[in-house]
Image (cartoon, rainbow, N blue to C red; front, side, top):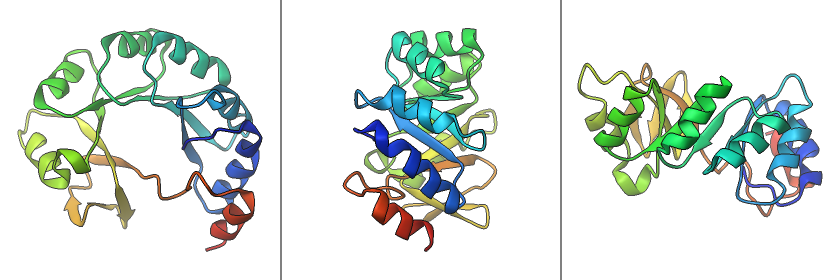
Length: 186
């Protein structure tokens, strides 16, 4: 989620909790990211992480603010190594078999397939995951979960391999707490 105003973090966390969502990824796309993470992470029932993390410094800022996991859009060895040294789960973005192999070689077993739609969606995930020795689990963008069956652009992805789905459709940037409250009750 992108928050450009940290004062929105607390009402957003409350709305997510009311809607049954206790995990949030706050992206490092704005200056309000670290403070937003700090505010949301103050709720012990929320699992808050940082996304769009590109540098070691951003990892440090996120962890200091209370992030309990890191997501990056690509496989950056410096970010991955630093997270591993800190003992913080890291989920790097991958788009190719080479990037998956690189992640597996350094001990990363859960990767984010990104950007999913532009890279062929579910068909590409199935192709990349088809080899029995590829043990990576997937976080997929633009998908939803129903009864532990993950749907990525209309195609079911095997539930044992897709562990999380990311979507921007939970919270739209233009929405404010009044609309978040309404959605939480839907």
